[in-house]
Image (cartoon, rainbow, N blue to C red; front, side):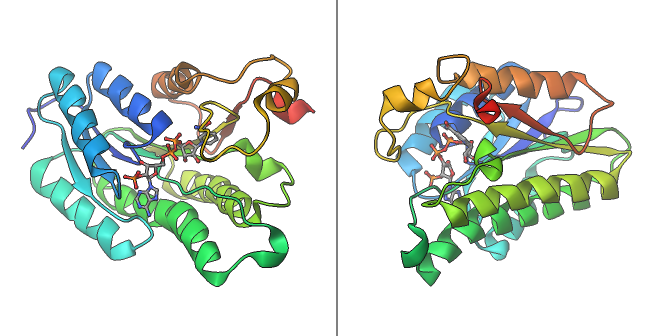
Length: 245
Ligand SMILES: NC(=O)c1ccc[n+]([C@@H]2O[C@H](COP(=O)([O-])OP(=O)(O)OC[C@H]3O[C@@H](n4cnc5c(N)ncnc54)[C@H](OP(=O)(O)O)[C@@H]3O)[C@@H](O)[C@H]2O)c1
């Protein structure tokens, strides 16, 4: 069991580019981190090592969030090791281009099951623990401003993120007042050359603040939500004004 009083954060997708920065910063905030990875074992091991310099009792587990059974197992393992759950950050996500007329069932399942179904069952498992606690706890889902944009080549992805935003409101209303549930919708934060199709210059021209975001922009928003106890069911766009276009 973790030491009494030390806050614990369960996070999915901490092996991601942005996800790993978030996990490290939460360790820096004094949380013990229990995080999931799926295919990036080497990266997960490196991140756990860094997190443990700051927060030695942190752990990780492999979990394919597109499978409800994997999420159940991860939370079972979590509960065997930790006796409190203060914060859940649902960040695991899949992202690739799917031109509308060619989307296959397999692509649909991969995107929607990882992003939407995975977030649903993560939040469900989380509230089942949090509801029994006597203190305020928080869930933060990571969605995407793409939920509000019409991207013809990314419909399964964008609909999965729009679904996460809706789930955020449903969970917030259902589990108030003890559990605060909010979503952060990043704009362009990290530019992954393998996945971003738009030329960088065009992408930046579409952002009124004329720069891509930085993981710190998302981390500051998480810290703001952690400070607040009167915000729930909200989607916070962190996008340099991109949605104003
Ligand atoms: N980075 C940005 O600019 C940006 C912009 C808008 C929204 N977002 C959102 O911000 C969040 C974090 O982004 P990121 O940059 O960290 O993304 P990323 O680098 O693409 O990482 C994705 C993460 O999701 C995990 N994942 C993928 N499929 C999974 C599955 N089936 N089961 C379990 N985990 C799975 C990956 O784990 P493995 O690698 O171990 O498989 C990895 O940890 C995501 O929700 C993303 O949609 C990011």
